[in-house]
Image (cartoon, rainbow, N blue to C red; front, side, top):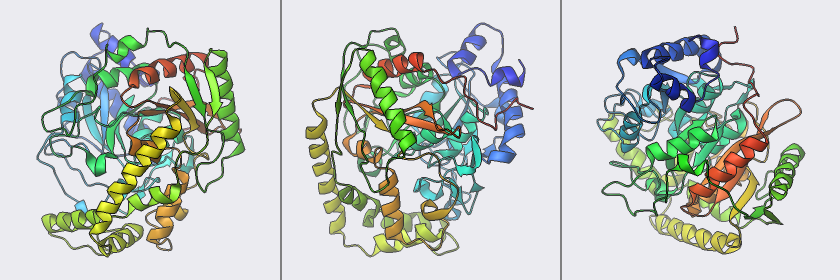
Length: 476
């Protein structure tokens, strides 16, 4: 197999070639390294391609037998491998525990070959840091790949691997999926275990999953990574059949709520609105009932979640464990300001945050209960240029300005971290300048099956596999 052939396949396709004996896992690993060597110097998406990549273990079988995989440098961990969280505070840190996530990955046949970039502590929508530099968007190097799973998205879009680990605490999988032209699902809370060390992460807001190129890879990944483990805070309702089987099931007629207005302080770009209207018309033509829906929450409440005394105390504990102190030598300007602001908050703020979460879940639940799915923009605008108010390395931005900016631009994503509902960004449109526009489909809690079927329908009706970023392995 040649590199230009490798990049044409999704993860499911590569695994089928391995099973047929047409290519070996070792060949795929070498092709991934070749792709990395060709494009990574331009996009800066992969911090480390493992020196021992050719001997990485993975099951001889599974839905993703032999497929190259990449790990986001925060969240789910591999025992003994570096996990620096995009921060000088954690430079050299090596967890000693395998997350269940990566045990599932290996059991599913995936070979994890390296680490991808993330903003410091995964805390902003731009993947740029003092430790690792700026990750460029393969569609336009002057623009952000998004965050915090920006390295994963850029690597998949550019063809280094067909699938990569991401995580999402306010949009961190869906944002880079939208801006890099990928499929990015944030599963229901509890669908993917955070164990054994990080169950119910960040008040239950954050969930691990993957970025990929096709709906069938998303469905297969749900089968690979789903499942409860001892110590999980609750056991979510389990599916009636495998998610891969859902790809062949009828969708039925659905009640669809459509967001055509801004849900926050960032205005909806006319091209994004046009994409929403086009998708709404398509769903209506498929036989679904379409009804407009207004913003179901108050953004001012959601912004309070970004600053918490719990965050400050956990950073202090981490600094002690690393033998370092929290200063401008270990944290970036905005991260340091967020820490200082959080440190000075009263302990009662943590209780207040829990009440904010409860009220939001209730209000949003009531507001959208009449719908089977929602159609919204993923982001109100296309990928933004590097730097500016969204960058944690910008010394001119205060903690409050940073929080308000992130809240405003994540207006359609973060709310569903709070409710725990599954939501997927699909690359259904492009701007006039050729930048990807992701649209978000939100399901009922625990109902990834409906999302799989609807996403399949939309992919078939508006295929995106023919679209290519400017930076893509095998083009030279």
